[in-house]
Image (cartoon, rainbow, N blue to C red; front, side, top):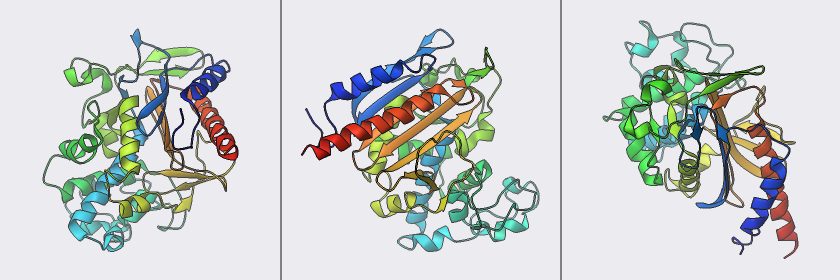
Length: 352
């Protein structure tokens, strides 16, 4: 059984993954591999907190949220400005956020007049903090900024009349068929444990040296907001990537903007590829001259996440973990698994 000539049998992916796992005995969380929406491989590992994680277990996905936030703001800009999306992307922040907006903490900073949504989406704004000077002039270089995506969230709120969590559900989650995914605006993961919608949320832990400790009082969702506040599941993220890259969430012309490399990334953790890595809009583009991958990572107190998508094979690899640690084994595992799947595909193509 093959898939459009792009990948060999499911058993090959399964056997490759199981063999590779022998090198990674201390993985936590969940790994899922899918072609379009068909699961090729899924493995859940021992989750701390006496919870057996599966493909429907909920995790805080942290900065993978930025993938959703970029789609949300592009859709709204298209709705308000039509085909002239470049004009909208390059409008300064005061065109969307008033001088008395609470985000400015009493006074709009001068940098607001020179920063655009394009800068925020591509991490080229130079932002450090609301009332600090820019680290550099916009467009000059890459600097990862959670604040930039929080500002985008406030722009989204300014462009829609409905609550932002409701907008994400209606415009992003529902069209993708994501039934267990939510943008959470306040509280902590521990405070959600008695809420029916979050019954499958696994508790978060941190690994410090040889010690693993449960996190009970952080992270604060009000601070994560649209930079990192989404809770989702492995299978929902498979649905998301398939819907997004098939043009069901944003029009194809906007998807092309999302996935157009803007600037090469520097100082980026969790990437062990041989090629270059570029920032786009809520998407990182990994390129080695042959293969192109769309991906994004996330990490916060108690949780780590990584998603990747190969547009050629339409293969998604999702991994979610409920332990925050340096150099997580689950990322190394999925990086190697991705490379091995690419090799399987290349061999199948050569054999034609």
